[in-house]
Length: 391
Image 1 (spheres, one colour):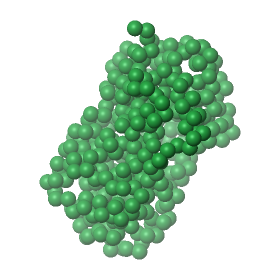
Image 2: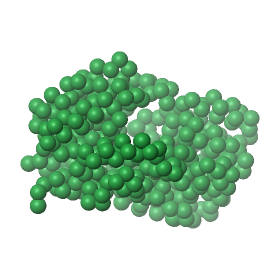
Image 3: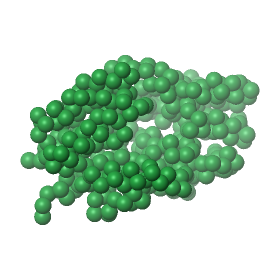
């Protein structure tokens, strides 16, 4: 039986349910080697500006271990933040037939790469980078990435923009396997009446019953353009419209100050919501907005979550998942990320969408998200593993 070692920075609310699914539905033998305890212990997220731990179980149902991290400043925000000298010994002791890395630009990932190459253990890579918003990578950066990616025998790409990124860096199609980003559909279930009841109650408490609600949920950072979204909303909102922000971050003060200039507008702020609370937050909304610019939003798994709940999405053309999930007139609305006027016009059009058309977009969103599943991600991973075996 094939033994796969998975090296991951920390337990992630999007990946742990997939690992449980893999254990329950496939015969693959695998162990996840975690390099940091973020998510399962209370720690501060600098972009959210708050300390928290996820309130869902991220470790049950599959085999994993934490490798001691000796970094003085642990985290994924710098190269030395994942520094786990014992990693190679732990890998050697487990004796994997292959290693899957989620990332490369930390000290321990580099250790794992060169350990695997010395031991003759095939390497697989799963990432979600893209080139959207960038004409080309700098020459030296491109050269280094081409060299790095030659160390890997296979790549699990998550979507169209990510596939094009790997192709641009010289990865042949024979090494590319579609393993899309997916979320736990059981958790984001539009038929859950208890969740719908919570959402309805929250709408009433916020004074939004009967209004068309736009939702922004996530980190309030400049790259996600929450301020531009609020400016666009205030420019054309009617008394029938509302905008809800869920989260926290560096832009919070700017957002609240701007909202205070228009007390007549229906702008509401809710605090950071943990994973168990998010389905009801999405069901508050008629439209979910992710207006990120630049190459910041490598995918945007919040879009998967919202669409699983039948909420159409408004995204920029630089959000990594856009080509896969958000089609104008079918599952939502798309605007040019670097054009604030385009966001304002697109938001205005979305808010004026007739009710029956909004319901059609919601049905299409749900159907599209339903094609990005753990089954599909697992099929891609297993195909990549099968490619490592001699014919």
